[in-house]
Image 1 (cartoon, one colour):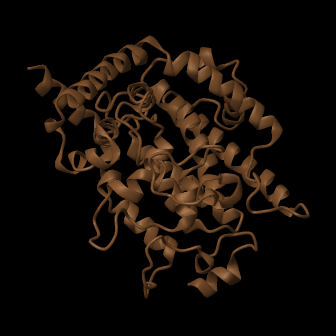
Image 2 (cartoon, helix red, strand yellow):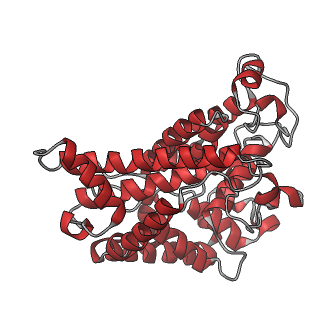
Length: 369
């Protein structure tokens, strides 16, 4: 399989046989490449399974067809493979990064992340990309010979997708792995952009399903307007909700095609480097997506029906955090065992970040009795 990669992948694709390896040395597997093993370790982790019960945008359990953090992750992985395949990059690595990218997300979506960051403001902060790295390096412990999942350096570096982030609270060693500009692969860039394509389009989809957005509100949004015109030209009499599903599909298809075309052109430029930011939208679509992002924040993420539910949920998170700090004996054994080495607040943060929405709500009920 490594020989096949050497023949089939582009020169700038990350070959598994050229991986910088794992922190703790392990023998090669007979039937799987290193990145395929990374993928398997992620999907078999407890943190991955818990994503099923964590909020994406709309509180988990409020609708059977609304996305959860798990379905979002699967969709990111699918789009990552499509883009990586078209560019002759390593699909296994791109997919594995996509599958791991939200393992550290707090319950209650981005609102929960903001509340946990507020609780940790004086204690090293909280950010879900750093927490995802912490999960795979420390908090998951299925193996007796080493802490964490012992994933490859390329996958771990791919989780630190924001330039300038430091691996605070992480066991990653060395400046190279704290500087994405120096070490992030093109496959990590693919997963990062696939995440953006997924949440823009699918948050729109869920907001329409949840009936907090209307077609009339979207008619002046360039991304929607252009894709809607393409769909209506082909299907003149399609009823709702089929029509908006077709438009969402068109939005995704257009974005994926744009990224592939723009990135392929960037990669053909003389002197292009695997460490530079080469996986991109065109300037036109980048500007349109910026407009869409502003629209989503104004009309979806801060919508009263979303904001009020999230506000109540985040107050629960704050109360549970404070209760654990007052009474650390409430913590699970694993978190309690890290208090001496890493501090009480960090141990509490780890414990809460790993919770599902419903488990945190149950804990709040127990504490409030």
